[in-house]
Image (tube, rainbow, N blue to C red; front, side):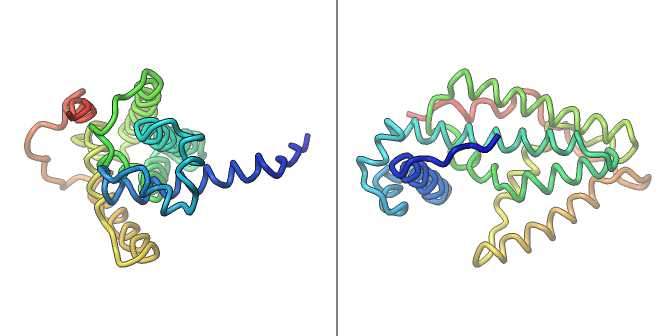
Length: 212
């Protein structure tokens, strides 16, 4: 069944919302303390149009975070549904999340708003899927045994900091370092044991406490 096209006014509102969200990602990754007016200016919309879609800066930040978590979940589910083996699923997951750049938002936005129950539920689902991907790769002998699911978040954060002179160069550099990480995480004998204990469950949860 074909979805009927949106009316002119509704189509314009949808376009404005996409412009606002794209602008908000760029503005708040660069400066999470930026005023919401900076988002409207970058999006090329009036501040009233922005507030019609998002009642406050916190509402907009929550929307960005929820969208990022939903994208992470989509990538993880697609990796698990693939038919190319546990090692390929792990590689597709790692590369997909880095390409989606969800963790640039995590780094910037943590502590800038109060999470909702929906966000905690999305985060829990994200964790379940990531655990399933890591467990499958371990069971298949594709992933070094001293790498745990808690390590993933810090790997993603490191890769999110890789930025070039423009989007194309950023993509090239991230592809390079994803390949480097994947080589380091493979399971053949000869790896020296990683030093120190891995991240513990909940060790970084406090970063989401809203800063005063």
